[in-house]
Image (cartoon, rainbow, N blue to C red; front, side, top):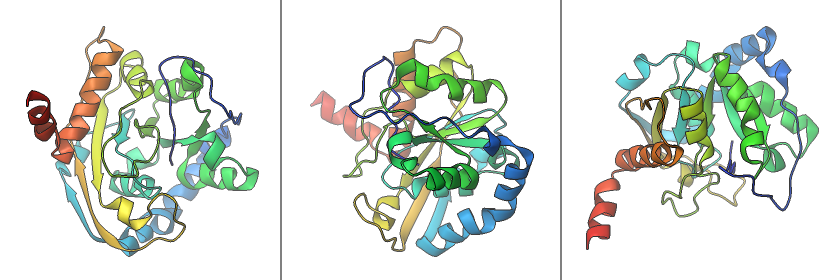
Length: 244
């Protein structure tokens, strides 16, 4: 899912799209559907379009447990499928995906399909802390979340500044953060296009981040962004550029 500027404050967005989460997507029958359909809704897409598909740091996936906050960079709608393909079944079964209400839930039936297929739920752009309520409820009740902290797809591939929402969730709900960097997905389904094309993709999975009680939101946000930059291999280049 995409384009989710969950902000730290309560800024007003120009176009709110008020859509309530489909809580039925958490039900047993919906979870069974997603597990049975995963072969077609997730893995077949990755096999078809991620050619070749390379995973680095796969060992970091073995030790995670619910709830965990999964963060990734964002260059394509295909990012969601790539991340979901990496998760062990117990994590996949209890992972929800944050989605932009005004983009993914503009049409009622399509929104319901997103909820059923990926356990997505809508977040109102610029909704501030109030928009985080359902995310907090999910984490508190043992569900993991997949969220893209940049809030929208990068059209250049360069990492955009992170929003504060994911850091608020990680620190206030006391959950670990799993950083993932995806390279190449932007070539499969670039912003502004409707047709997918095969492309080489590399997914780099980092070590879990944990934040001690009392960690400032800005510090957590910075640590999360630096973890993604390190996986991208750009952290050193940025430091050198800042020093020059």
